[in-house]
Image (tube, rainbow, N blue to C red; front, top):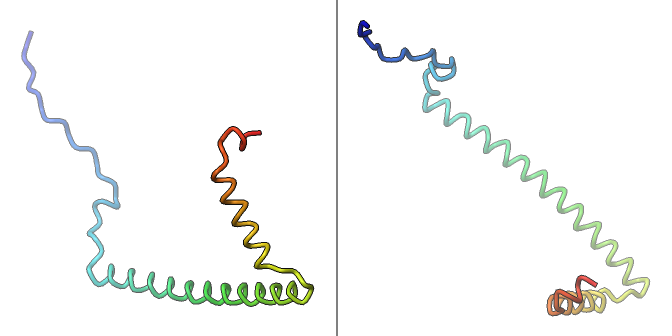
Length: 95
């Protein structure tokens, strides 16, 4: 039986993306600057939405006060119920 020369395994072609040179420093900086600009605009829009939601909530609170609903009492009651629920044994919670 003859001894065969063993050649190192040939490397398979690398994907095209790996062969392309990495983005230059300026390109990377431009990408990140663009992303920050976009995110800053998104944050501004989110703050506008939050402001509108807050105004709507205040309008509803004012309307409830005019109707004589005591929101502070309801909030205190809810907090007491949550505290009692945390203190209750697990068996009672399951029933």
